Image (cartoon, rainbow, N blue to C red):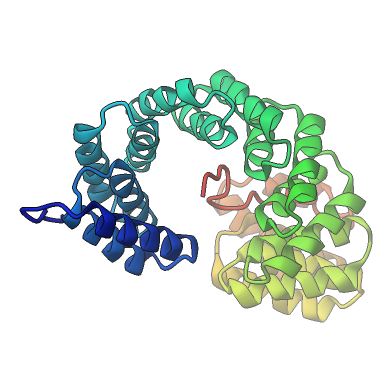
Length: 347
């Protein structure tokens, strides 16, 4: 870290500090870091310089360095709330939620209406599994800043986990109203609409999600399920193909692509797709079940019996189902996938 000169030059230190703030606001973190370090060389008693250096270190992924900057600043100014807040963020990044909560609360005493701090406290309690406290802080954050879309997003997730789908949907609607480009909000909105079997609104949400983030395969998978539920088999097939383009090992997307082909009366392509599914996952039980049914319905008894024997060898409950459900068209639809690693955000 920065070393001080024998004599201070507070005016020069302020110039470097102001320059650093400007570069920080422009997102030029490395340049800002150099400016703040220069400011401390000329005046090591600038607490906010330590705070900015701590924030920059966190943004650059140097959590331990960020923590040390904050601690060094607090040695100079122990009551500085901004340094306590930054230290809380560093602790949270390290998974030390109890320590983070202590630091955030110190800052909150000085700034009780700060929505971002209330949101951070909500995240820390959320990570600690203290969901009632998390709900309280998310709601307080929204009280002081109704447009805090990350607070309404996290609030929706906690509420949704408690089984209140309708309230979760209302929170997520506020999330995407506040920030229409927040793709995670659209994905979760689609998911909760799917739970409520509101396929029309789920479709709208997933279509927006793939528009914003066309690289997320699960969104295409879930969109495909919505299209299947609405009997839009061509659109469903295209959605599952898009999912497979982004994740060629997605056995479920391959399986439901086959179902879309069945709906389109294209059994040959459906069978070829089912075999492609088995090349991804040989023990995909639903695929063996559906292949068996197709073969029986086509009069290809021996091939159907092979699939039945495979299910019996796996001790799959679908073996008995295959024997008794030849009158059905397709197996029961799957539940939509949850988006991976998107359950909470504080980024």
